[in-house]
Image (cartoon, rainbow, N blue to C red; front, side):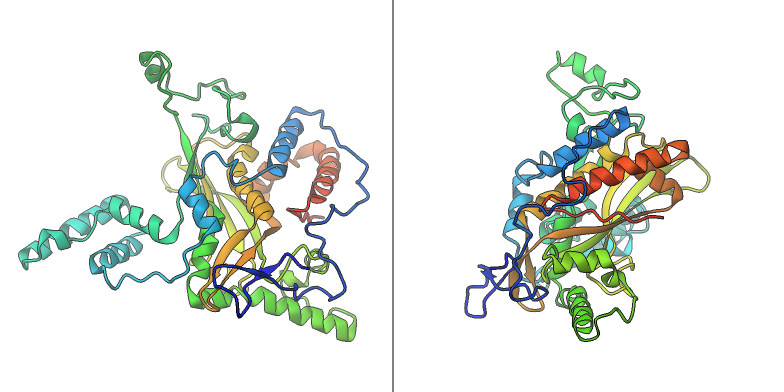
Amino acid sequence: MSPIMQLSEQGDKGEPSHDRNEFEPANQPDERFAEPCLTEYNDIEVVATLEELKTAQDFISHLQSATLEGDHDFDAEARERLTNPITEQINLDADPELRAGIRLYLDTTNASDETYHDVHKSMQSYLAEIGIERGEEIPSLFSVKKEIGKLTGVHPMMNDMCINTCMAYTGPFYGIDACPHCGESRYDQRVFLASDGQKKVPRHQFYTFPVGPQLQALWRNPKDAEAMRHHTRETQKILDALEISGEQQLWDDVYSGNDYLEAVRAGKIGPDDMVLMKSFDRAQLYQSKQSDCWISIWIVLDLSADIRYKKRYVLIGNIIPGPNKPKIVDSFIYPGLHHVCALSRDSLRVWDAFQDRVFLSKLFVLLLAADGPGMTYLNGLTGSDVTARLGWLVARLRHWSRSKWLLAALSGS
């Protein structure tokens, strides 16, 4: 019986039932919870000798054992929301002041916090002039952000990082107190010494925005929930066409790719699962001064190509402040990938506002994207070491892809 879990029409809305995966032939067992399928690299245990590859291998080992309970920076309340999502739409009709504050916040997202404060102050002065009581005032920026977090379930995770942006204290670096690259201390030494070693204040931190709560928030809107079913409908059309004609007639999206269709046929991607692409790039915040930062995003491939790249649907992964370039990028993208791997193992529980049902979904990372400079940070394939590193990387990723919780699709020339 397929592990794709859906609500039965007769069952309780909060309890998913086990229905057959509609992408899967009726007589084919679902392999997602079976033993990992073998590859030509099945009997090869790749051991890295270069220091950079040893570090990458350490991060992979941590990802292979990822669980939500093992996520140090994900609090209990947020973890509870992942397994027990809110099953109603957001409604602010009963709180017009909060609604006004959220609208003001959304209207000033491209401006500074100071802009919100100035507009908020002007609005409060006007309300006082027309006799509105203080208890009905528009909330402050801090209060609005806090309420948005409660409404959506989206809260950033903060991780310590090197003051010089060399690396982040995550994964195998979680417990160390100094940067292995430049030797700078993790914590403010003045505070540490003044407190006799009792108080540890990180010198620098970066934000990671877990993708699970963001996906749950998408599904809580009926229009967006219906749009998220695009990948299911298109995949079924392709499979139906292949069964009739025996060959692919049109290649117009990622669903037409062999890697994707093979994963569907193998039962690794079901109709309730979500397919993602991760992208990583540098951004210069100001034209006239050094202000580089690095940003990763998630593209939701379940959506149609005409809307998935719009700002409304692009999900932030993490933000790495500059101005220096990161030296060990794996350490920065690790918290987001750890979260995805944990959800791929334990499943994400989602409420579909369009169909009014709860289902379990696994996250499938299909593609990794970046421009030329960005990709060199992600795969290290630069200069004369390209051939050697590519051979190790392909072997290791294929060995890793045997895991039943994640398939990494690697494409290139």
